[in-house]
Each structure stands twice: as structure tokens, then as C-alpha cells.
Amino acid sequence: TRTIFAGFVPQYVKPIYEEDDIISISEKIISLCQKRVVYKKDMKVGALAKFLSKFAMRSDAGCGVDNPYKMQFAINLCGRLKVIWAAIAGGVCKLFGKKGVFYEITGPEVSGLDGFYGHVFEDYNDFGIPENSTGVCNEIYEKLGIKAMIVDANDFNAEILGKSDVIKYNDEELAKMIKDNPAGQEKTLTPIVLIRRK
Image 1 (tube, helix red, strand yellow):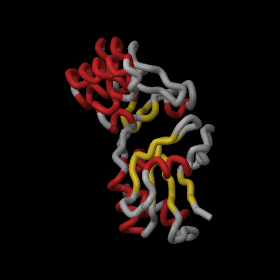
Image 2 (cartoon, rainbow, N blue to C red):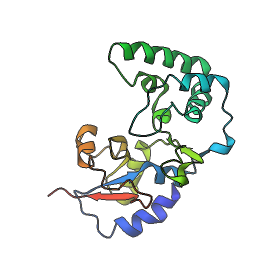
Image 3 (cartoon, one colour):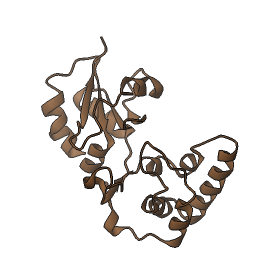
């Protein structure tokens, strides 16, 4: 995260930041700064990942564990037994109308894995990006006095992955602030959005 404090946040955000502002940062940028990148070429997809991915629910919001590479990442991170249990529990709960149980069990690093969808952006075909955000947001505030949140957003929804503890808004309120995805969904994206309430 050294790049964050020595580079783009002080240079581009600090000069225009006001006390009540909040910055929304793409989780992809934070992950790249942390060098927490998983390359597709290094992933060996096993039979279990191929099998389980066939039963995962597909979403218009992006590529999930229906992608065998992402399912393999979940197995590598959580272990085979936990992923099998999450898949079974998720499947049963879907019968009763409850979605997202697989990700609740496997945790935020699996749900936050981004990438492996080159059909949308060729640049994202080769890697997924896990990251952990709350500590980074608090460090940004402690070192730079800037309130920050890290988000995984697209044209369908926005998920708050972490935020500075001093932010008074809850995750739902913050998600509404960026519900129109101001960073954009084209190949040339905006890594930081400054939010100023009028």
C-alpha cells in the first residue's frame, strides 16, 4: 500500500479534499498496490472446481464461482471440505429463496475476488484480485486525514468492502451514493471518486 500514501492519493486527492468528503476507491487499484494478485496462468483447475462451478448461480453483475478458476481459488483458500459444505448449504438455502450463502461461508476474499472475465475486459482475463480493505481505509485516514471506502462496483450493484471507522454512514447508505457507478464500466475507468454531499 506504499504507493497509495506516497503516490496518487496525496497527489490527486489531498489538494481538493474537504473535511466532509469521502473518497471511493476501486478495489482493483488497492489490490494492485498491495501486489495481491492471483494470475490465471498459475491456477491449476481441478475436477472438483469444474464440477461445483456447474451448479453455481450465474449473475449479470459479473463473473462468480460459476467460473472454474474462481471456484478453484475458493478451494485453494478455504480447503475442499469447507467449499463442499458451502456449496451444499448454498444449494439448499437457494431452494428456500436465500441467496449468497456460499459466499457467507467462504468469506469476503472469495466474494471479493475480481477478474478472470476477459470477455468483458481483456486486461482482466489473466488475474483475480483478492483484498482486505478496512485496515487500508483506516490507515489512509490516520496518515492523510482522508475518509475512504473501498468498493467493488459495477452497473448492477455496489458492495462496500471496507471503510474508515470515522465514516458515519452505514454500508447501505454508502452504496446508494455510488449506485449509478460513477467510476464507469468501460475499459478506461476512474480508480477514485470523490463524494461531496451538498
